[in-house]
Length: 66
Figure: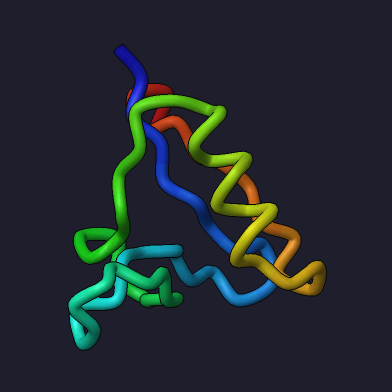
């Protein structure tokens, strides 16, 4: 089973749920251990479409492939 994180190719930051809100709104974090881990590429695509600006050039990284 693959596990994915979303990373900005521009800044190197990772997309993660925002711990400061009770709603889990995504936010960019710099540490991999704070990144939100996803189980499928479809979820990654939805988060990228809904919460990433084009300048981030966001990509899904397969942690098992590293």
